[in-house]
Image 1 (cartoon, one colour):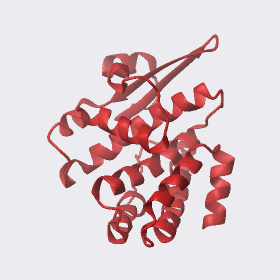
Image 2: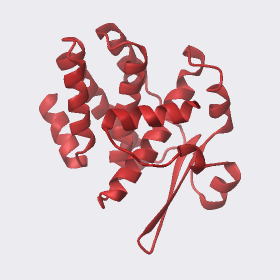
Image 3: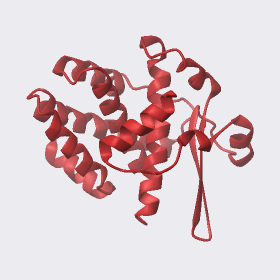
Image 4: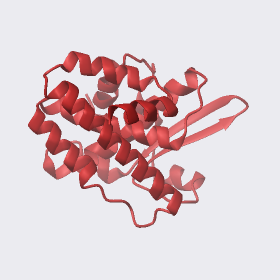
Length: 207
């Protein structure tokens, strides 16, 4: 199974949601992305168009990202893998919110994607305390931001990173260290279904 399809199936199984679509059918290339986007052109981008109550989605992932995921996963393509997880996370979460007729902000999308990166990598390796601590440091402690972000974008990514770091540290302390993985999965499903305000409230109480 292709990497993006595996990530999609893994996230949908984790959160007990079913988009009913194949993410590969929504992938577009640079030509399509550049025709509709005039601002920044990052290596991963979810394109959303709403018109007359209908929503159209497309996901752009740089060809280099997709190529680097064809030969298994290791430290050499870790950055490309988490970029792919981010795109898949945005795709699934946007569909779920649309079907629930619930608006979703960019910060909420980014926060959920940061959590999804952590949990996907954790469960794909081993839910052990040492693995979790190393992973959190790699994802959040060593975060670098693109130099062409404007102030609003930088603040949004920083807020998502900071809140995800605090939430995953709490998950590690409450569930990973105590080897309560089924309970952690239940918590993750509850968190997934919350809106942004409730997510931030959960994190504030946890931290």
